[in-house]
Length: 313
Image (cartoon, rainbow, N blue to C red; front, side, top):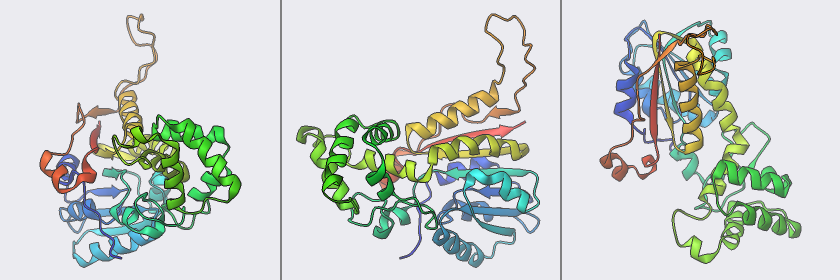
């Protein structure tokens, strides 16, 4: 299966990064190299590009694609979690970067490849690992988590109104046999949600699958660590562009950006700041950049995307 990924908000990302031809740039979610191709096309022989991905298939496919493009910049391809950016740069003996992009969406390849177990539209083993070398899978979550913990992640990470019933139905079903496939889980979720509710909105399993995927890959914990670390390693004038796809991700990015822009912790009633904390970044985007109607029409998966950009002072 060909590894491809339609880059969301492509023009907006490339423009927002304000790419310098001799700079150092990181794509922390390399995927199918959709955005990376645009970045590398603007880099000269004195520039460096670093592509990071947890998925070795994505990394290998993107390496082949970018090398075939014959762009002259130095390229490094690293199998890692973008949350480990400081360790990655230390290994490469790089102290600062001029820009970075994080596209937090699951790639089309992962969604469309049945064996990866990300999709509720195809029957497959319950997996959902972004790094196939990890041992913890969706099956572990579904079959070993307590009803209380299942309720918590489905409610918090999936923002699913029927989280309590879904957790209850999962626990009842696994008493009979282990739940091992996405198809089995979808049928359990459908049974838990009243028919009238199933007729409205997105696929009834969408939010629960999102929640389990986030838990398996520690996506929100990794993002929380990564945003501050990426800002830390930006050179003056360097920019960080992050595309989110649901409110939990966007809230984390927005709050960290806000805290870095206004770091003062003094009580509001203090006439002057005494904590001494000074902002080291400035906002490039006020409200997030959203996909156009034309992009949504050609790529429906872009519908919920939001792009936020910040610049190091």
